[in-house]
Image (cartoon, rainbow, N blue to C red; front, side):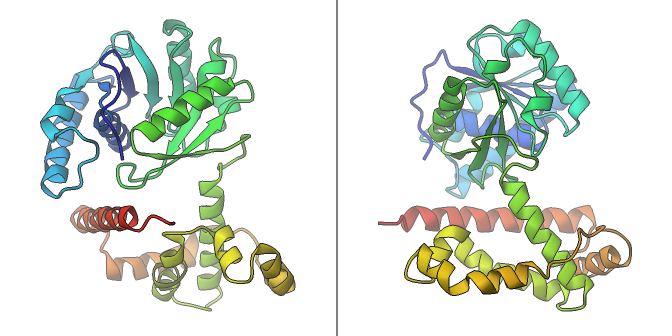
Length: 322
C-alpha cells in the first residue's frame, strides 16, 4: 500500500500527459509526492488534470483510491506545466511518458541531460526500447534507467526496472525503493534484453495463440477462455515457475516428470506469425462479436476490465501467502 511518508521537498516530474503519464502522476501523488505534469501544450495539460480529477473522485467513491491521503489532498499535490526546465526543477525523479518513438525519446533525454543535476533519476516508461539506445551518449547516463509500467498502471502494479550497462546500482536501488513507496511491485531486470521480461513472455504467448488459431485448432473465443478460465486464474496469484514447483514434488520432480514432454511439444512450435491477412481478419471479427471496435464499446469494456482488476487487487490484499 502506498504511504504518504515522502518529504514535502520531494518532487517528481512526469513528462507526457497521456494515459501512462496521468497514471504515473496519480501513483506518485498517492505516495505524497509533489508532481509536476508536463506537456508541450498547456491545453493538453489542462485536459489531463481534469481527467485525473474525475478519475480520482471515482476511485475514492469506489474505495479504490491508493494511498493514505484523500482525493482532494492528492489532487492538491499535482500541478501542470508546459515549460520543461520549470517542470524538472527541484525534482528527485523524472518519469518520461512520451510516445514509443526512439528518436523522440532520445531528443527528450538529450534536453533533460543538459538541464538536470547529478542527483535526479531519469526514467523512461518505454515498453521495449533498449536503455543502451535510449540513453546513448548522455552525460548523466549513470542516473538513467527504464521503469516500464503495465497498462493500466494504476491497477496493475508491476514495474520492470531495466538498467543501461552504465546505470549506477544506486540509481536502481533508489528507483526500486520509490516504486515500493508508491505501492507498485518493481522487478529488477539484471541486464537489458529486447522486450524486457514481460513482453518477451507476452509475445511468446500471443505467438502460439495466433498459430493455434491459424492452424484451425481452436477458435479465437475459446483460445481466450484457455487463458481467462485456465492459465490466467493460476497466474493471477503465482507465476509459471512456482506453478511447476507446486504441480509436482518440487521443481526437480517436475522437470524429471515433464522434461521430455515439454521438449517434444516446444519443438512443434511454428514460425513467427505475420499478424496480418486472413488470420488477423478472422481474429478481429471474433473479437468484435464480443466487443465491437467503436470507441464507446471499447471504453466500456476497458472500464469493466479496470473494475475487475480493482476487485482482484482487493482480493489479493486479503489472501497474502503465509
